[in-house]
Amino acid sequence: MSERAVTIPRGFPGLAPRPRVRTIAKHAVLILVAGVVAYPFYFMVTSSFKDILEATRTPPTIFPSELHPENYTDAWSRAPWGRYFVNTIFVSVSVTILELATACLAAYAFARMRFRGKNLLFTIFLATLMIPGEATLIPRYVLMSPSRVACAGLPCLGWFDSYQVQIVPFIASAFSIFLMRQFFLSIPSELSDAARMDGAGHLRFLWSIVLPLSVPALITAGLITFLGSWNAFQWPLIVTSKPDFRPVQVGLSAFRQEAGSSYHLLMAASTFVVAPIVLLFLVAQRYLVQGIARTGIRG
Amino acid sequence: MAAEVIPANVRASSRRRLPVEAIQAWLFLLPAVLILGVFQIFPAIAAFYMSLFKWDVVQGAFRGVGNYTDWLYDNSIRSPDFWRSLSTTFTYVIFTVPLEIAVALVIAYLLFQKMRGRGIYRTVYYLPYVTSFVAAAAVFFWVFHPQYGLINDLLGVVGIGPQRWLDEPDGIFELAASAFGVILPSWLAGPSLALVVISLVTIWHYLGYQIVIFLAGLSNISQEYYEAARLDGANERQIFTRITLPLLSPTTFFVFTVASIGVLRSFDSVYVLTNGFGGPLDTTRTVTLLVFKTAFQQAQFGLGAALAFILTLIILLFTLIQFRVLGPRVNFGE
Image (cartoon, rainbow over all chains, first blue to last red; front, top):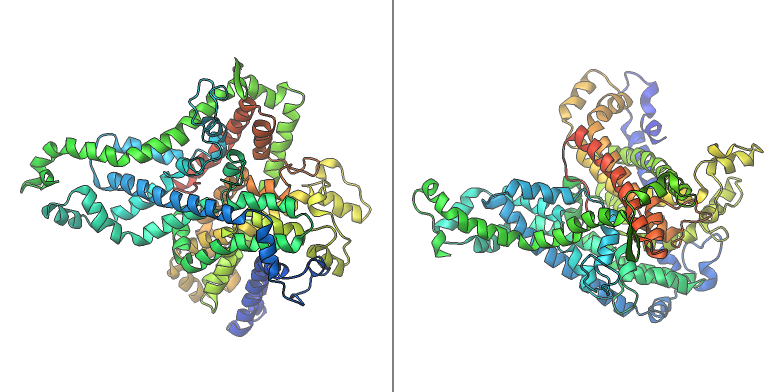
């Protein structure tokens, strides 16, 4: 449909296309789709400031007739949001830092060091990218079970309702290793030779020369990991049962049932769950978009 | 590490240095090997092992391929569930991926041309991708609410009666035909309206991601082709269909497989939009939801693992086709 809109000057062979009409038509299509895409966010934020009567009015009012910022404190006090946020922030930050650490070490070994079995190991690492999470979900769950009975024959860690159950399985990813390796390979080897001449070992070379040069790649890999961790839902849903360890996404899911018809409160809660990651994206979107364009990850 | 100072003749020394470097390399790799081994590779093998047993929380008798045959044809409850969920999953793919690709392609094509506000548009399209399905579901529940939802208001303006959306088990074509008094046979009913809503929310979520991939693909097409076509007097539409589309086809194929795999694997979208039940009347219960129900609601780990393994094979098939056509490329992860 939009294609036709773009080709308005078709009927005038020989005439140059009328750029103004075309430009307006293009913007019309782009604005229409942007409006559809952005509307849920607009609806969420405006509804979060309405009172309950106005929030359920049809058709919805475009702007709250009266601002009710107390919806936010009200929603905040109805569930242990502080705890949920502490949990999510702690888990996401830990996963991101630890994952970057393991990725940099492994990527450096693959990019800069010689050892036997390198190609085989790298192939195995890449192959793990092909294993979908669903395939490993049940054994991973059993692995975390508390009692020996539950996992007869398999080892078990007893990590239900903890932070480590949400952190440790995710602190290595073949994807980040691959991304960092590609970046490390692009660093000229003359640099490493020069460092060697100065007597620097691998660890020091990695820390003081390679990593400072790799900040863009680190930010990209870190953002993708952080985003996945912040929005994680299925895994924490099945391995946590207490608010003490539950992340915001599972908390919000529980709050949806709890809030019931208090729709304005649910919208306030959704807004403060979405806001931090959206703000982070607005600040750092360049890196995230670059990383996705380069590697095609789809979380 | 003074021992590593390189002597003048690097080549001669490399043999002597190698064991030290190899030990160090394996130390560097150890954390990643351990984590990937314990939480990726071992569970993948264990999943297959578990699928061969009766395993109701506790390990039971060896069943061989019994769990698989139960799903495929041997069990009067399980196999209808399986085939239905498989058909639901593929319907979900068919009603999501082509539309998602078409919209993303058109938007990317428009955005690729020099114009004002490109950055702003791209940011807006991208926002849903960073938003969790849980939060999105809370909003879309209301937008598609049978009583209070905006969508029903909008449809009312063009004279279409209110729909039940996420509560509607009837097929979309069935509903459309019945509005004209036509009764369709059940195989023509189409996906339930609830599944259509889930597809639309999925497209909303991934649109910006696909646009970014298409933009990257478009920037790989050499400008010379466009210039040559313009010199030959090609119009805008001819340039799009004869130059852009064919040269973009590797990207389109890549997007197609990645998006299909993404939908085959999707869990959060269906789970949160149906409150975990795959309703109404099971019309949105995908294979991933059936795995979840079997393993974590019915505590049938062996059966669940077998079902997950079947799904994994289907996903691997898509991956292998993609590798064959495009060559290996890192394309998805968690």
